[in-house]
Each structure stands twice: as structure tokens, then as C-alpha cells.
Length: 251
Image (cartoon, rainbow, N blue to C red):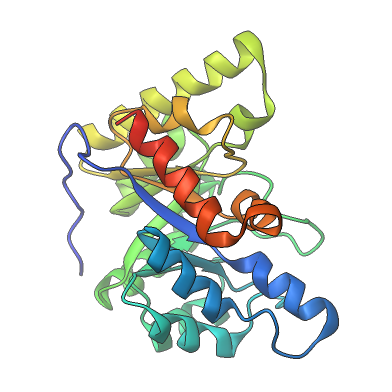
């Protein structure tokens, strides 16, 4: 079983993982093979991205099964597979052996992942998945709200990584946003204290990323929809380069 990562109190360089799901969403709107998420992965690698994230959903609304192997082979970047806690997705992860598997909540009717995984309420369901993925050498991450009970559940489960859902922060303003930022920072510190590597993502943009990126304990941000949207106007390479620069400015 893979051992938990024990990062230092401050990551020297904040990693940027880019979710390319919505390149596939555009492709699927008309069928065929254009635009190809493989090309997006290659551009991300050339622009300074540190990893590629894809979410293989139950309904295959964007990334398809055959995309996994093609994207995985397209670059030297680690592949992070977002997956629901189902037997089907576990078997797919074990078959493809991505660098990482991030277990996320999934509802068929939602447009995007709407909140964090309730790890605290699903110990019995998650424990065998975390164990089997870890035994296969796949780095396991739990996509959770920045709450102490969820971090404590990750500790019990032996997950080496947590990714904090930043949607509440991204959609808040004023004092509420400041409070959400504090929660993320406090939970990142709690994770580090317990030997868990903290990541964050969801709803991050050029305008709101820097306060999150400045949290010293965070090791990685995963950003997708916004960067693909900006790519329509500036190109994917430039959207990744700009986000990379904003993150580096506060580190």
C-alpha cells in the first residue's frame, strides 16, 4: 500500500493540475473527434501545467473510456482520475493505473460536482476503495469540504491526499469569503499536521485564485472549467500560462 506523503510546512512551488473534461464536452456536442482532449493535454504540458485531471462520469457526458489511455500516453504529466465511489470506477482505475484517483461525489442530475464528498458518513463504503487503490500504487485523494470532521475521516481512512472543495469560497463575497478562506487555510494546516497532502479546487478564477494560492500548506490546485472557458478567447496555452503566473506571484 502506498505510504502517505509527508510534505513540508510550505510547498516551494504550488502545482497546477488542469482538468480537461470540457474539451471533451465540446467534442461530444457534435460527435466525432474534434476537439481532442489529447491535444489539450499536450498544450497544458507545454504551457507549464503539472498534471492532467479527467472525470470519468457514470453517464460519460464528457471524458470517455478510450480517452483515458490516450490522454495518459500523450504526455509525461501525471494523470489524476476523478471517480465516483463505485465498483465500476474502481475496476477502471485499477485497469488503467493512473498516477492518482480522486474520489468525488457524483449525482446524475448535477451539472458539475456540487460539493465535497461526505467521507465522514461513508467510512464503510470508502475504506475498501482507498485500500485497493493504495495497494495498486495509485495515490488516493478525497474531494472534501474544508471541515474538521471530513479531514478526520480522511485520517481514519488512510488517504494520503485531500482536495478541498473551494466552491463556497469562490461564490462568496466580503466577510463570508474571508471566513471561507480561513476555513481552507485551517483545514490545510490540520491535514499537514496529520501527514496528509492538501490540495484545493473548484470555481477558481484569475480574480480569486491568489488568496487560495497564498495558503502556504497547499501543495496543488486543480482548475478546469474556467481555464477551458478562457481558452476560447485567448487560447489554452495562454490561459494556463496566466494562471501559472498568478499562482507563482504569491509563492
